[in-house]
Image 1 (cartoon, helix red, strand yellow):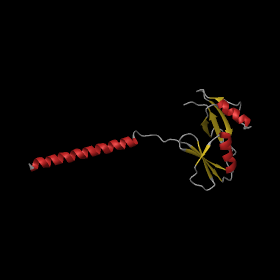
Image 2 (image 1 turned 180 degrees about the horizontal axis):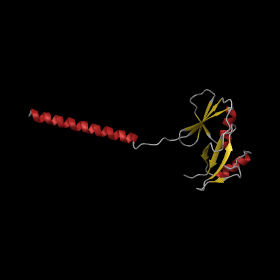
Image 3 (image 1 turned 60 degrees about the horizontal axis):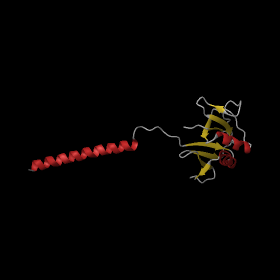
Length: 161
């Protein structure tokens, strides 16, 4: 009888260990899943005049401020979509000139409406090549480009992904 109980205990322990191992690996797999590629989080720019840049991103571009954890008067954060941000950091002595190919892009609901808004605010914008106001990519997405007060290039487009 002792042998039967002992074997039953061993079997129960082995089953429990197997189940624990299976559940642990299943939980690990479900938590990590297949390898996930990194996702864009934020873009940070260093600016000379923080107030001027904040006005530009709020009033011209229309970005919404988010809480700044630093609370040091040198950082302002903006929401750029549900999970993305722009971090504007003041205190730059000078900003190197940026080519238009180095830019970040924002998608707008209506590029036509956004261009009308820029026109009312007398904000200049251009096509990528500078030969017109709008560039149309081979996939049909229309885009315009403008610069912030420090010369950072921003693309605005009507992409629909």
